Image 1 (cartoon, rainbow, N blue to C red):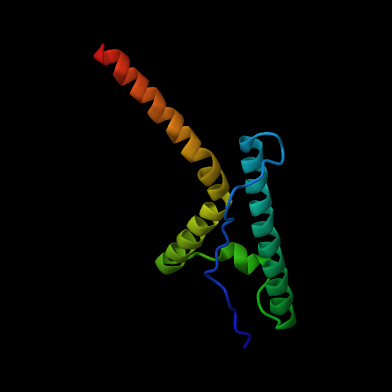
Image 2 (cartoon, rainbow, N blue to C red):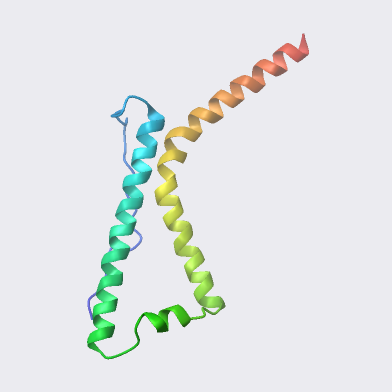
Length: 118
């Protein structure tokens, strides 16, 4: 059995992030696309390996996968890993764009409160 390591490792860049495409929004979207591409490539490699191993073992094919009905434990497991994928893929936009958007919203609300108080 091969031991898998670094399953919980998450890499987050530290320090200032250069703007490559001219604005932070485009950079964040490019980061999301690249993170998603990484997830798809890993998924495709693992799916290919499983299909080859199952075929070599004479077990089920795609029909068996299509007929699979997950139980509650499987659905909970899938929900957890989906959330982790969403966090990795969408985290780029959240980390780069949300703080700026929140700051703008807070500034706007502060200005509205100031005007309303006059």
